[in-house]
Length: 319
Length: 235
Image (cartoon, rainbow over all chains, first blue to last red; front, top):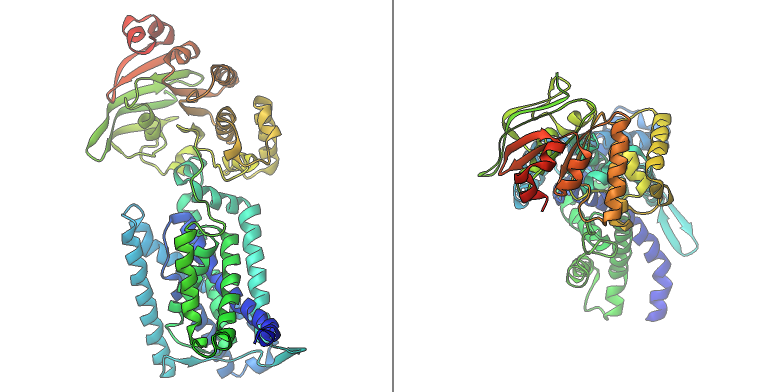
């Protein structure tokens, strides 16, 4: 039994890292917004879902017009990603402006409820548009890279390689931006102390808008990649994936960007492991369908034993 | 035309009337100090200048321009530096990043570099700690960083909120020397202090604030001799 587990381990790792990349990039959106506003943006999963639909819509339109066959695939993927990022980024900024900024000084429960409201609105709007254009809210998109690549005993969809590659590039870019640029530094300053940041002539609202734009664009791009990976999407994919990405963010220490990346990969690998091995390891008592339970057991365990997460700050510094 | 003018400024915190018609002026090139007990309204007065509290009634003008309730980041970019109470440095950022943030509105990189050198000339200690997280600095160093950070925007008016708080007398002396030096090089200072004796020795003029109202306004030397001030704040 152990030998069997070991044998399938490389495949589990590859699949887990791919899934983890999705969790990680979505988790960044949760953690960035939490870091700056101490708000859990529950609409973030729906931004991810909107990105998936925007990407799928672009590809379906290109395909319908007969252009897809004539354009280089990589170019199409890059353009789709960029358009989806721009649109979901603006969507995130708009949500902040309309649903969160007016509640900036309200008790913390109020914007949370507002976020849940935005989730429902986005689900229903996307469902309405999808049914109106395609007749069904479950949409099957165009897969750009359908082939599989074999490395010895491991099989990888070529799509998965793009998911991983794009996610890693985006995460590295974001990390550099936040640590090295003037606006990235301003973002960290605003996250720590908004009043004092304003005294440094930083336009705090603009920094918050930028944070929403970047976090949402990452989420939207991940949606495009997810649709490529899985082929079929519906307006409710953001809910469970959002919860898991949120779990990843908590696992890494909410508010900590590198922590969210790490948490995403850990969660992805653990989940794939559970999905592949729970059946064999428990002699068939628990099957792969328990993999979601696995993710939330982790969330509960983290909240119980290390509520600040793996890389979070347990206490505020002295002033 | 006075440099900074507060006219009949009223501020409320919820139902609490914190400033009850504060009026004061600061002329260009002066050091003015605002002294008073805890909770008298010293910090609130400074926060009213930078629009960090809402002015319900009254007017604040800087260089003849009405800045009442304008957004904070716009007010400070007119040339006001603010060293807030409790220093409020960005403890998770490095010393260098804190100073860079102080020059956020400055586009010219060579100018930022020049000002950095000027700050190091005032506070050589900061240069040694450049890449350290600001939260690991000692209290005195943090105060130096807070002042250095405010100087990075080269303000024409510097507001200081209790720069001596929690510091050893030696360090306080050092910081007051630097303030005097800054003023001689042309920066106007509005200094809020509980350490009234030292503040009045440094300042040209002083105001005494009590329960949100200005009680006395005079030359600093006169206030130092005043029996009432002596009894209440210099004992």
